[in-house]
Length: 65
Image 1 (cartoon, one colour):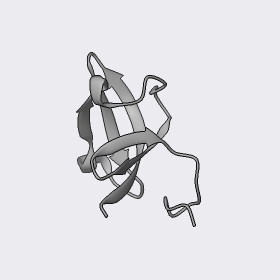
Image 2 (tube, helix red, strand yellow):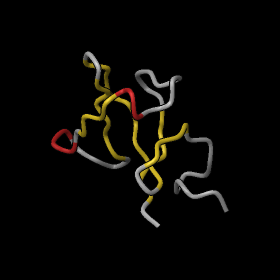
Image 3 (cartoon, helix red, strand yellow):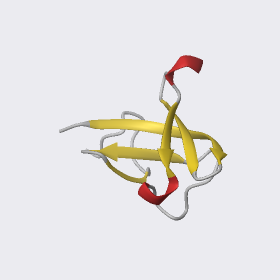
Image 4 (cartoon, one colour):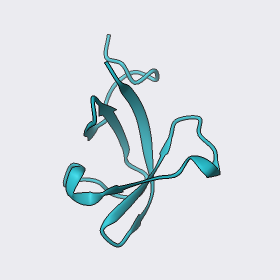
């Protein structure tokens, strides 16, 4: 199962710029806001699981055990 934890760095028009946990400045990933939860805002953490995004409320690893 594909899983990665992102933080929303900024909102840029119709896109949110996501940075993976532990990622650097070159790891920015623009994603259309239409694909993200309506609560998405700068600083929010999102879990991408199998290319579906949800608000993250779990452990530091990104996996709920």
